[in-house]
Amino acid sequence: MSTEQQINEKTSRQVAEAAREKEWTRPSFAKGLYLGSFDVSLIHPHPTPTASERDEGEDFLRRLTDYARTLDSAVIERDARIPDEYIRGFAGLGVFGMKIPQEYGGLGLSLTYYGRALMLLSSVHPSIGALVSAHQSIGVPEPVKVFGTPEQKQEYLPRCAAGAVTAFLLTEPDVGSDPARMNATATLSDDGASYVINGSKLWTTNGVIAELVVVMATVPSHAGGKGGISAFVVEADSPGITVENRNTFMGLRGIENGVTRFDNVRVPAANRLGREGQGLKIALTTLNTGRLSIPAICAAAGKWSLKISREWSNARVQWGKPVGQHEAVGKKLAFIAATAFALEAVFELSASLADAGQKDVRIEAALAKLWSSEMAYQVADELVQIRGGRGYESAASLKARGERAVGAEQQLRDLRINRIFEGSTEIMHLLIAREAVDAHLAAAGDLASSDADLTAKAKAALGASGFYARWLPRLIAGRGLNPKAYGEFGRLANHVRYVERSSRKLARHTFLGMGRWQAKLEHRQVFLGRIVDIGAELFAMSAVCSRAVLLAKQGDGRSVFELADAFCLQARGRVDQHFADLWKNTDTADRRLSKKLLGGDYAWLEGGILDPSEGTGPWISEAPSGPSLKENLHRKYR
Image 1 (cartoon, one colour):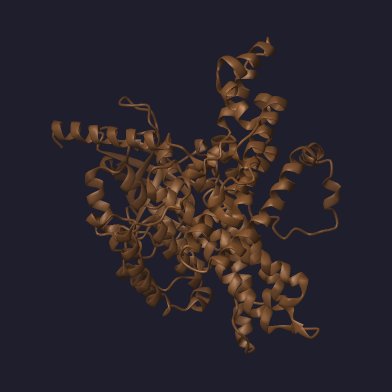
Image 2: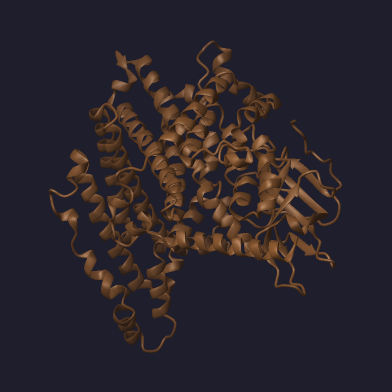
């Protein structure tokens, strides 16, 4: 590469990074909810796809639907793998290039239509959704598209669009949500032409069949730089790479997830994405929009659960009438229907905001993932309860004895991972709390930076810094107190006013928490978790109200508003309970109990049982070094 090309490439990277940083500073509707700043104009009128996006997206969905009807989910569940011919069929349709720009051979679909395609595919079998989203949302295409050089884009994006399945390798046997402890290394060669990667990666979704992978590894400091966690695009059949195990799980029986070992794997320096030390930024940026795949999959589950519960509740008769007409079951049906409507609304709004490219959607995407994964699992659990014994029985068993093969228990198993995938619920609570209330946490840290003269520091935080001086007065009153405000939402206006009032109330309670615990606020994880959950419900209510107005203009406004109203009433009950639990709870006693439990005070309670897992291995295995002694399970599908 010439000096002029190097300068142009460096300039292009700087411009792109500046643009990304600028976008991250733009207003976030969800962040405003936590600060008592309810700006409905950021989400309403509800963003919609452009005419060209709609035409291209609908055409693709029609073709994808026709193909998906030919697939047999029972085969995937029975054989615990997606047949190779299915994957080849997806490649032929362009499924693996849905988000890749057309100039690189992809379809260039919007996030909204990409998510709708995931909904459709996941309704066939969730393992298909996992395959596609692991490739498209967090695999090679996304980080290369955002951070890759022009040469890297030309090299990899056409291959990915044509069907080269990819994977994202971050987690290690002893490293989960704390990547700073990463053990995998990428050592720069003396001539600077390549890196040598060593280490082991766990839970590599798609890793068993991947053709390309993105690997996160720590570059040791060297004469040319400080090194740090960096990202590399690696050919999966490179010498020294071994897929040592194909993992099996509670659900997602068709997922190609494994353990991948790297032993002196040489990777050209040109395969590094971004700069050395930029790996975590690349990973986190990729996950921002990548998390939106989970709300789409959860929305599909909500729709299917609604269909099955409605049909079953009409068909099953007990005590002289369909079970759905009994109030105990009817309440569950109402929850499923209202939540199914909300799950789709949350996905559609979040994806639309990301498509608009004008909003910081880090918090929106994280909230959508958190809220959708929790609520979809509750919906699936209620479906199993409504179906009773048939909900607990497998689809294969039902079919074998002549009944409709409804996989309710399978859906419950398959959905459970979404509360862990791409950031567990607990990690999401901490991530969102840090992002959403960073102003409070910063002020809290400022207050406790010294034990002396806290009164003066409090005055500085409240006055001289200007933040609270400007912020607190805004929490006293707002449009939400006006009974005629938000009239454009029709019968849902009262719910929108509730969201605004609750947003300001949430900010006041967060401020009280800061005043009570100061810098220790960030360690009050359960308190912050409730704060986050309140904001998540308010975000869902906002999405529902905005989408209801949009859909009412397109069709039956009465039924849309009824569903939206039902959801908002249910959500308000949950919000009110969360507010009550902020200050009246068992957190102190539970914290004390857990410390004694970890100290062994209650080991006697474990007597009288047998533990079959004893002697089968350590709790957490150490990643071995050197060449693998196991069979390489990596397989090619094309």
